Image 1 (tube, rainbow, N blue to C red):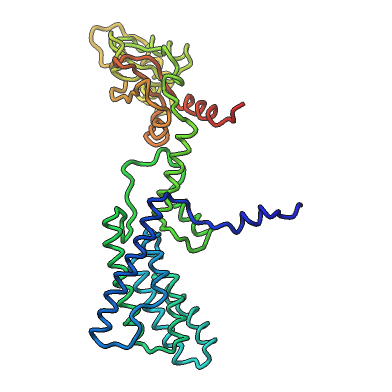
Image 2 (cartoon, rainbow, N blue to C red):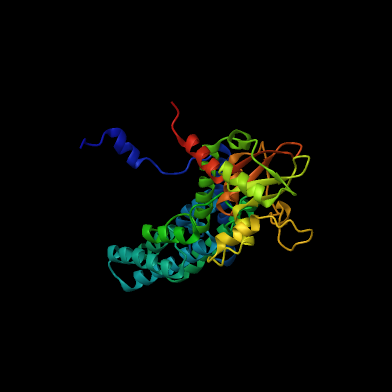
Length: 377
């Protein structure tokens, strides 16, 4: 096995920050600067007004500002994480400074204890570690957690709510329900939970956001594989069809001769009025009572020749009237949820005049996907 090259090592340690456009970067650093400025001005005014000797702004707030304004969708940047994480960590650091004389031990214990408390209170916030360490090494009292830590954190969160709201980002962040169901999603919420449990690490993205991202990626993959492929390019053109008054025996014979499982039912203008499937025949033959179903099917197909009869004899009497049709210029990618989730097996294809021009099946879509996924050349 070859040793890793410099390029391999560089790739491993390359920053993993997602690429964002210039507008998003501008919004992030402008917001962080404004957030810190607003927090500092108000905190300083409050300190001077009340005569407090404590510092009115502390370094961990700079890291908090990065999260609130650069990645406001992160679970680590939400209001409770910022306020709770910084404040309880400062309390832990102050307690460690009081109980442990050695600053090295006090700092180490403060950081590990702060992480444990933040996990327990569900307010994990990376700058909280700095808050705990600052309080432990500075030997400050418990009042440090109230001011400046609690007050600064609240001011920063309020500035984040105002700025992110004015610039079109949701903060506090809540997952936005997709307008439409994902196209043929192949994983469920339980599958995602199982994958996260197996991964067993803290992710800087919420579970719901991760699910949305995965579903969007899957939809994009469908779009990439199918491209602009339309029904007219995949469908079986000129399909066998029957009319409302076609005898059942004739329709069954046609279905078997063509080797198809469904026949569109059209009127004299070739407009679809229903669809006839093998399931329609079996349903009227009492397929749920398996014994003797063959004889009952033959009886159904055999014409009685009577003037009046309760037994259905024409296609229109047993066909499925509610039939889903698709236009010939519709993209194949849009049909995936119809086949995968809605339970359709055959879709009649119509032209601009709503006349039958073809039929498309699940097998047609699978073949199209297979051809589209093969490498070119």
